[in-house]
Length: 276
Image 1: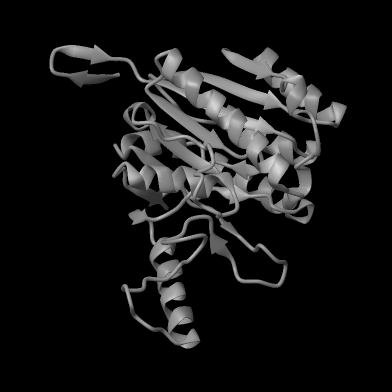
Image 2 (image 1 turned 90 degrees about the vertical axis):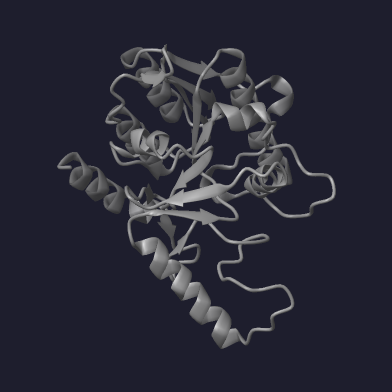
């Protein structure tokens, strides 16, 4: 709880996640949620069970039976369609997930939650991370994680500075060589490797949104005159258009189980973070 003048305000957190996931990855994800340290926070969970594997459905049902205040929704019949498990995304899947997230925003507003934490079902979070994100006091802030989007590529954070996924600074009209772009990109990466809080231009997948940002109308609907791929880009552009700054936090980095071969890395992350 927080003191606001003479009034005591109870913090109420909704954790939301659309789920269409490999059972082995989902099991680690749910384990990471069960370890969250949220003293004094009234917490509820909302999952959209879009799984096609009965083992994944059973994992969600078991979590609901073991953890207080868990809602597991089934998608409306008209939303049924192609899977997005395994990162096989297309436009249908992207905007389906966007609609699920917007329903979670609607619920957070309707039921008086002070915060909404939206997290992807392959992102493992540190036990202290969610409370820490709330304590930053920022209206929109993502916990950073790092991913090799291709197996032989360098690790990149899921946050960016401009446009679709530009990760280097550039002044208007400034011309940069490819070498200068690389140097500035690596400078951005080096900055994010240090624990701290940094303003960015785009974020997603592990994001805390405060109620006042929700009340200003941030959502995942497509911006009609924007061709960027991915619902998070449209969320971030809409937030920027409302003068809501976006922040990346690197104090308690998350772990992205992007490929099945990273399962052991995910298990190691859970072991290490259990020890503080």
